[in-house]
Image 1 (cartoon, rainbow, N blue to C red):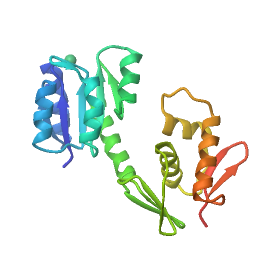
Image 2 (cartoon, helix red, strand yellow):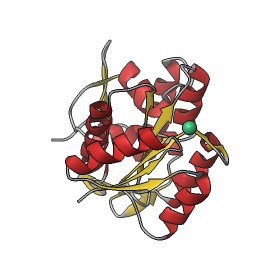
Image 3 (spheres, protein in one colour):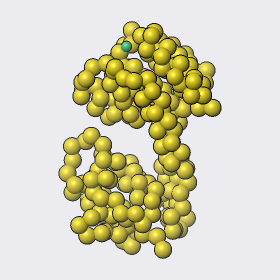
Image 4 (tube, rainbow, N blue to C red):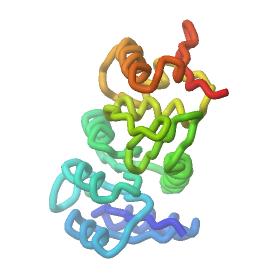
Length: 219
Ligand code: CA
């Protein structure tokens, strides 16, 4: 049974979220403040943390980096009351996985939680072997022919994305969205990182599909 921590100080909203999740068979646990959230996290791990940003003891945006580090296996779904891009973008930049703007339909929460858990299944194929390359996602390491290849974080993310569907062509904008998210960078940055990857992994590993994008070559 997937465990969900619902961090929300408005009692009626928290109650509704917990109720719909429980009805769907999730094990939903409540917290009404940042302090209570850490208390819950100390006594167990959660698959998804639903996090309201405005809590009585602080702005939960500031807690996201710490959560990200201490609960690497959890997905964070941010709830924001304001229709504010600042909160939304900040939440995602800090490492949240998804967000919802209040007011929302409680059924939507269930759908989002389900989508995150599906995503996790794909993300946590921890060790991917593609041709001569072995990608270990939990250790963020890459080996080729038994030798560890040092990659930057972005290089690793690109390789990991391409390896999630070998031979599938990923467009530059797909790669940008997946790896850079909301960062405002140009398409060129993708080409530059692909060239770094080729230098490190060998020039035959990633194919350019002219005018379309890139794919990881596998025979
Ligand atoms: Ca609140």
